Length: 464
Image (cartoon, rainbow, N blue to C red; front, top):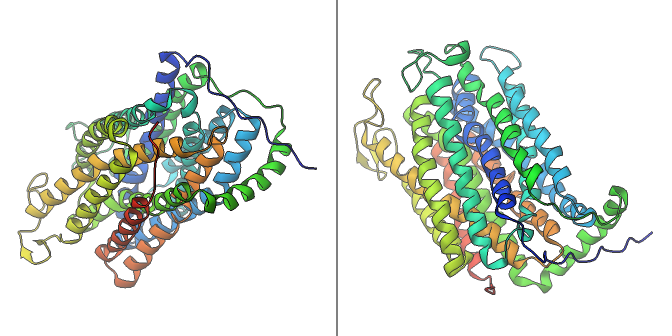
């Protein structure tokens, strides 16, 4: 039986009130601690330094886990996005995948150093939570075009990213100031013993980043469910939508050659987002391996990076509405290429590949060596442009996607951001393993950023 496509849903006659838009913006606030605490600054370095055999092995295992999650997301996201378009509401999907985020993050508490199951628990929980976080974000993004007029999509996307960064910043400050302690001193960044009786030697503060992420999401995603309007039901059942969705997806993929700019943008997004995900996934692990940074150094680094990221996302949204998303993304990629080259030129005892510098010495204070300070500066640059790159990409897709098929194309957007996400981290992991060098792994990302910029340069975008 052929299922007819649902009618295209017209834009709302009256745009939702500010309360509804604000509630939607807080989804980013709710979800960001997963990426800040678990993916980048707390749990990932803890995994590499305390659970894995060594830093290089930890980077490789984390890369394989990231790749597996990305492959699952790539295979399912456009199909599920098309089904959501044909059934209507997005909130049930956000709730279902948000539950995976909560369960996967909460499981990380049980990855205790010394446990025979610590590594499998950590990697399994990370994969499940990553799938939940990314799919929930896909369906949340699909609500954008019914919240503000097209000319304000840049503001909406940029503001959401900025609020998300603030949420990540606050959760990181709580973790470093109150929960995660230096295992040698037993003190947190605030100079106190961890609250809740957390054991610094057993790294319970680092592991508590998982349950904190889960609780944070449940609390702060609730306003979106209560106050943000959802799309209306089309009357199709899930089974009917699934049967029609497979054919619709096939037709959509066949249409892409007839829409060269949209297809080229999705391909470009596939490449540069893959590099960005890998850069964030391994940034903390890289610093832990090269400079010996522990939770405190990594956490302060994360706080500073998140501050620049908040400002960058907000300013990028304004710039997006003023000059368009494409120039914003191209400028961000240029900055990321510069940062990657700069990081590759650093070692514990040199900068710019050949210039010697005094290496870090235990007890010399935060970022006392010149290579550490250069790495810090490059990290802040990455934070400054990462938000605009992701926010402008999101608004650019919202402008390019055909009306009434926004969920399907945000599914393809997630696909384009994830279809090779298993490839980037996997290549980083393979290069790290083959050359036994973390720097060799990160060199892969330069090729990805260059290819993404070349593809995006050929995209033609009509301004609203």
